[in-house]
Every structure is written in C-alpha cells, then in structure tokens.
Image 1 (cartoon, rainbow over the protein chains, first blue to last red):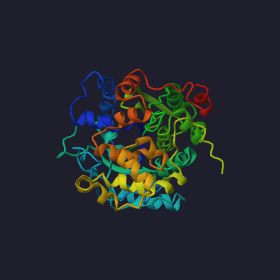
Image 2: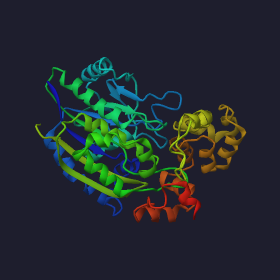
Image 3: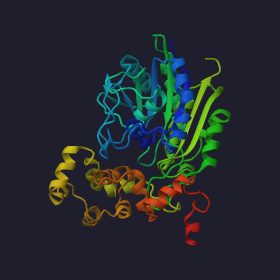
Image 4: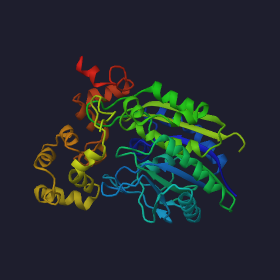
Length: 284
Length: 129
C-alpha cells in the first residue's frame, strides 16, 4: 500500500529560485536562507520518497483570470516549467506518477471533493522552488529524484478555500493514497507564505509573531489552527500571507500526532518571510 | 454585503468584485508572460492595447505605469507584476514603487525585518498618523 510518511512546509519565493539559477546562494544576503535547508536535503536523501504530493498555488501562469479552479490536480504525464515573464527556470521537466494521480482524482471526487483534473499544465515557481530548495541544484537535463503530483490551489482571487476545507482535503488525500495498492513512500508538501504582502501601500509587511504561532500550532493544535478565518491571515500576515492555507492540506494528511524534526525561519527573501518545517508521522 | 477585510490599510483584497472590474486589464497584463506578446506590445503599444477592451482609465494607467492606480482599477499584483517584468522591474522594486518609499529605502526596510504589524492592522491607525 502507498503511505504518507511525512509533511514538508515551505515558502516558494520566486527570488529563491532565481538565486539558485544564477548561482548566488553563497552571497551574504542568501546564505542564511539556504543554510536552513542543509538538514532538509540530507533528510530527504535519507527518506527517498517515491512520490511528492505537492500543494502549491499557480501565480496566474497555468490559469489566467479566465479560469480559476479552487483545487486543480495535475494528472498529466509531465509538467514543463513555465515562462513566467523572464524565461522558464532551467530545471528538469517534472514527472508525475500518473496512475496514482488519476487514482487520487477519482477517490477525491467520490469522497466529495470536486477537484478539477488537469491533463495539460505548465508549472511555475510555486512548484519548482520547493523542489529546488529540498533537492538542491538538479541540472536541467537531469531528473528530479521523485515523481511529483501537483495540486494547485487558488489563493489569488479571494476567497481561497478555508483552512478547514484544506485540512479535510488533506485527510481525503491520505485516504486516497492509502487505498492505492502499489508500495510507495509519499511525502506531502504544503507551500507558500509565510507573512508577506506584495502590493499597494502596506507592501513589505512581515509578522514573525504570527508566523511563529502558526509553526508552533501545526504540531500542538492543527485543528484549531485550521479554523483561522481568512481576515486574520490578510490582516496579520499580509494579503499574500493567505497562501498559508495550503499548509493545512499537508497537515491534514498526516497523523494527529506528529514529530517536528526541523524548522527554519528567516527574514527576508525579497518581500517575504521564509518559513520551513518538517513533520514526521510518529508511527511512520 | 459587508466585507470584513475592507478596514485593512494600504491593501486591496482581490475579490470577485475587483476581478470583474479588472478582468480585461488583468488579461492584458498576463498576456505579457509570453515573449511573442512582449514583442508585439513593444513594437506597437497602442495597437496591442486595442486587443483588450479595458476602460480609458485603465488604459491610461497602463501608459503611465501608475502601479497603484492599476490596483485601484481592479488590477491584481500577480498580473500587474507581468507588466513590471516586461519593463525590467522585479517584485521587490515594484513594491518599493507602490509604497512610495522608493526602491532603496524599501530594500533597507526589508533587510531590517520588514514593515511591522504594529500600527498597520486597521485603517483607523493610519488615519491617526
């Protein structure tokens, strides 16, 4: 049977991808950002997941304003890194576990999560930056070490799905994974955040107290945390901080009881507070 | 309908009303994601803008590169940032322009930990300043 062994929470700031692609990660500005992923790269090399279920948001790349699915599951065989206005990132094509993805699609819909199925999709920095920080530099003509099932969540147009909905979707994803016959190790990523506001006169907002509270309660009070109303994210963590709802999908897919094995928090990367956490199922 | 997020200062929450108002403006901006469109826009900006039935105000704000006005008229940052990228302006410098601080002062603020939440939660706090 396939099983989810751990969850990774991780920001997906585009400038982090640019720093890796232009090989400036050892500059004083970037060094502390990447230092916090040294443990994570060893961790993932040891865990060797077969599949990463990667929850992220598309930044008007695969979806412009004409189509705005709340949850869109990538079921294509491969996903090309997209041109987001400055050329595609020089990273490998992302390969899916297509059979598991289509199994999850069916299982979720029968479990009353009416997701959108994507049989063609390009992926942007929201998906590729978390892979890069966790796996390090992978040459463009190489292969990512794991297969990847993307789940794109709308957080651009208000309202994003509620934290509670995301948490329960995580539970449904777990049921789907555990009903798949093949023996597979799956790690689920929840990406985005942490506090940041990219727009208008309050741009640059950072709230370390809110972010720390969020990271703490992922372990101590995930259900209570998932009930956080949208206006709290928008006010306290900035208009783009609402991306953090995606971490609840990851958390919902884990055991009630988890062990925090790693945490990293740094301000700033560009406009954003970088947050990262690794949670293992206690019985994994 | 009352919106519980309208009292956050210096912030536009991109909801369905703003999305409806800004639709053609945002579709213009996102079209610049692709090189072929960036080339067409560069070759003849007005002819390219004719493809998108935006309002006269929106069109003027595009011409003026008035980044805050674009948001006031229904633009969303993930879209308007493509127009900025077309002009060679990255996210951080765009934020510096929108805050009115300028690029250098904004970058300096971020290096020092960003804009504090204290005094920046409610519009009433800004009105007192």
